[in-house]
Image (cartoon, rainbow, N blue to C red; front, side):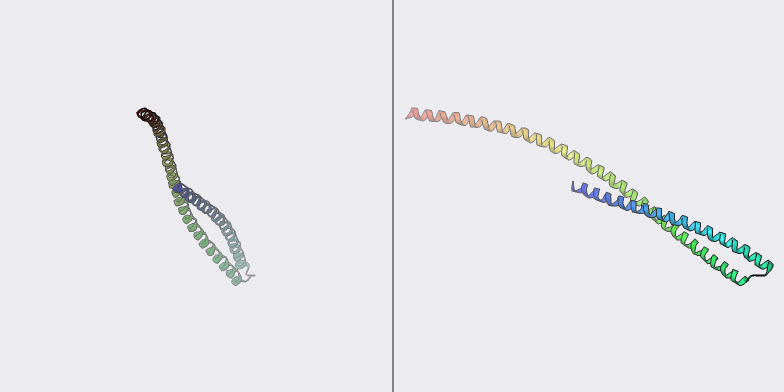
Length: 167
């Protein structure tokens, strides 16, 4: 019963950990999607700047250095977003591995709990059968005691009668 309670408590803790890991995985998936959208926006901005740069170079009216600086900034943002995406994917992989490990442990604990319940049920049935045996033995012993008390009373009565006759 104590082992069963401990198993149920540990199972509850593992389930809570599993739910927390699943929630973290969902958050990371959402972050990954957001970063992919940002990457798409930055790529679109890069394309726009490239078109502007080509137009400026062709008609020579805008500052080439300013556009190149803006292009470098966008390229730096793209690199940072790619690095963040890789980091999120790595963390997501680690969370998936943890989730898989915890799922396996929960299955093991559920199996152990079923076995513990079966063991407790078997012990309960054996105990009940033994109690029944002991109650039957006690009833038989009580009947023997009552018979012996009756025999003792009869013997006492005979002895008293014999003493009275002898006197």
